[in-house]
Amino acid sequence: MSRAVEESNRRMLRARDAMDRGYARPLDVAALARIAHVSPTHFTRTFRATFGETPHRYLQRRRVERAMFLLRETGRSVTDVCFEVGFGSLGTFSRTFRAIVGRSPREYRARAVRSGAPTCFTMAWTRPVG
Image (cartoon, rainbow, N blue to C red; front, top):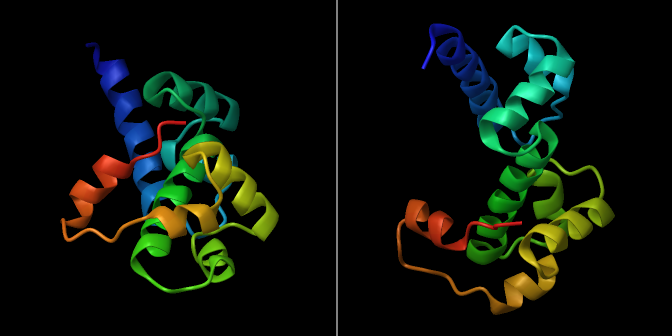
């Protein structure tokens, strides 16, 4: 692997780490591109080539993964969970959740079983594939 590819991967990882830390805050491509020190267009293209999905889709999936945990492990309302993980509207949250998980947040909660396993194992077992 060339030095240029390694540096590009490092920059993309820096931006992805920022997304992982700040998933609940509003994040836009321009801000993430600044973290990676590239233009927004180059960032989107390179992020997709590196991780196999667009920055927007990655962020949505991270938010849905966190929502899955909150729905499974807490008694908080779906609306509270929606806003806590960074979605701006309940409709968008429900539509995105269904597209990624395959069922609505309420259906997911009704069928989800709290696990006694560590969170890292639960996340790996329940990670959405969509």
